[in-house]
Length: 501
Ligand code: ADP
Image 1 (cartoon, rainbow, N blue to C red):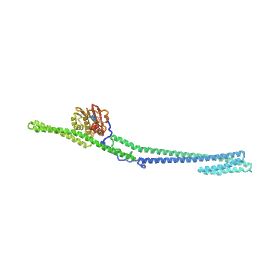
Image 2: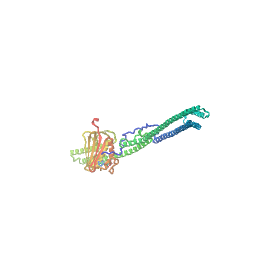
Image 3: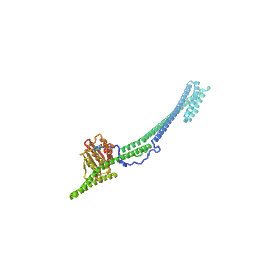
Image 4: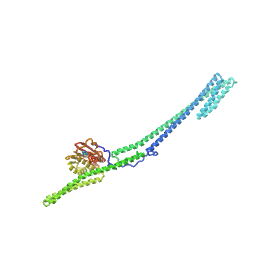
């Protein structure tokens, strides 16, 4: 099983540099704050709404005018029809009263023409000629017919002329009416088109503004959420002030505050990591002290015996004892050498080519005394050739020492820890299998969590740090455990293939 820790310690620091702040290239005329953009957008939408309403009111008002034109033409039509009706009656029955009514309606037609002229300014010339000429002639014929001393032939001729003129007037008024209706229809259609265009423009601009507003608000939040996910995976250590975020002042402020918080968390974490390292060094140093103490004791005892029994000792025995002293001091020197290497490695955090076979061997040497004290057998199997990877020796050694110390603490006297280094395809694999108490299955998912510990004096950081270190080396760490039957850690690291050398 492989478990992601909820946070990655500062080991990744410097892994990914924060990019320089990038300015938003979009719409520089707009304010940079979301609040400002909201205000400007609402203003634009309001102005468009006002324009749309004003144009609708103007359109209604103009249409009302057109309705009045149609009404005035209708009235003119009616008066002309009435005038013609009396004219026809007169022509049929020769009743002077009908002729007088015709003359009355001529006045009404004139009044209607004045109204029409008021509403149709463009048709003034047309109507004026109709008013002056045609209606004038029709009136004069009607008046001539009123004379009582008219000869029969002249009357007949005048009646014929009246009819023909009347027909012309009807036709002329129908034509004018039809023209006016067509004109009105055209204008109404033009107003409708303008109204639809303004409405479409309002919907389009409003829609665009809503789209951009959502983008301006959602984009920075999405960018921050994605950056947070990357930080959780240990691929980043701060939220970049990229284009998506720097489009708004609020986005920049939020990112700056979150980055400050991350930095503070990182510092705290580094302090914890440091304390975990010190704890590991403390454990190792305690073991080393024992390790040095034993040869020193032996040297001191052998030297004392040599001093006391020197006169009675044979030359061979004396030489044996001196060799023993030399062997013991070699052992002490070797231990001090390992300790020096360990502390040097911890100061030197550089990435180099590392031989895993030697690294594991050195780590075992550091914990050897803990194995001895815990009466635990450590078996180490490895290839004869070096198995190289790229990495930071101090960090990898910290992982190995931590897992070995955990195994020592979990294993009863008489138990064992089998360590194996193997090459598998493109990876180097280290397996550490102990015969300890094992980890209860319900705890297994938590052991890589920071601060998870079952020990009174544990920090609960060892495995979470180990996980982060291995991930930082592009590797993987898995654990298998059965309560009462021991635990196996399997570390996989990409190895340097011989062709790459
Ligand atoms: P710590 O050692 O400070 O408790 P670690 O992160 O190193 O912190 O380990 C977390 C926990 O995982 C330990 O407290 C222990 O319960 C469990 N654990 C780790 N290694 C082993 C192991 N080899 N056998 C049994 N339990 C283990």
